Image (tube, rainbow, N blue to C red):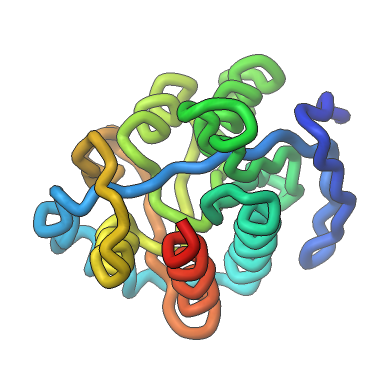
Length: 210
C-alpha cells in the first residue's frame, strides 16, 4: 500500500526489516515551564520503566534523525513517525514551525495524514514514535483520529527542565501528560541513555542559539 508524500522529505529506509512506504511532512512543538511539576507524575515514572524492544529503539533513532534534520533547517528539533502493525514506517514528519506556522508540529501533521490515508481499523493499529511527548494540541489530534499507542524518546517534563536550564522563553500553554488527555492510550517513554542525551543535546543547542 502506497501513501502520498507530504512535503519535501522522502526517505526510503529499512528499519529492522521494515520497509517504509511513503513519508511525510515535518513540524515542531515547544514546551512551557509552567506545568513541569504536574508533568512529573507517577505515570511518567512508570512509563520510563517500560521495556523497549529492539524495534522501538530503531524507530526512536529515526525520530532523533528527523529531529536533527529539523534543527539543521532552523527549526526546533522534533521528529515523529507512524509505524503500522507490520512494523513498517508508513509516514514521517519533522518540525516545520519556522517554515509554515506555529501549528506545524510533526505529531499533528501525522494525525492529519492518518485521517486522510488510513482506515479507522488501520489507525488503531498504528503506533506513533516521536522524539518528544505530545503537546496537548497534538495529543488531542492523536485521540480524535483514534491512532494507536505512543512511544516517545523524551517527556514533556524533561524538556521543560532542559529549557529552564537555558532560560528559554516559556510557551503560552500548560503541558499535560498524554495519558491525562487521551483515554485508554498505551504509552511508552521516556527512553534513557545515549538516545535521550542525543535529543537533550539538540534541544539545548537550539535554545542556546535562539
